[in-house]
Image (cartoon, rainbow, N blue to C red; front, side, top):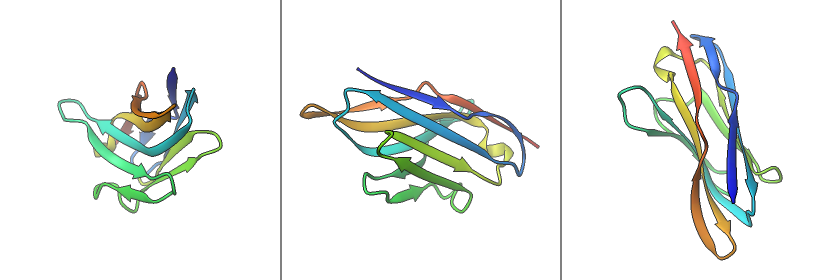
Length: 119
């Protein structure tokens, strides 16, 4: 069984910073892509940033230049450093991984962590 535990959300003023962490544990053979998604009230969940197993990142246009995704493969952990936060970044942030368990690959989601940016 695989578990994802997120941490690092909270309340911050516009222009501030937060760092999210998501640690995966369980019978994981390897992790392919690791992502961060977010969902604001009344909106669909959207992809914020993704990082491949080799460390190549990609970002949504709305966060480019402000957010940085990184991963520590030894710890099965993905991070999201969020700088210059804006009120429109307010959402529940979810981490997602695609992991190899024995010979198959599965998708797993974190429980979500609230990020609130006040103006």
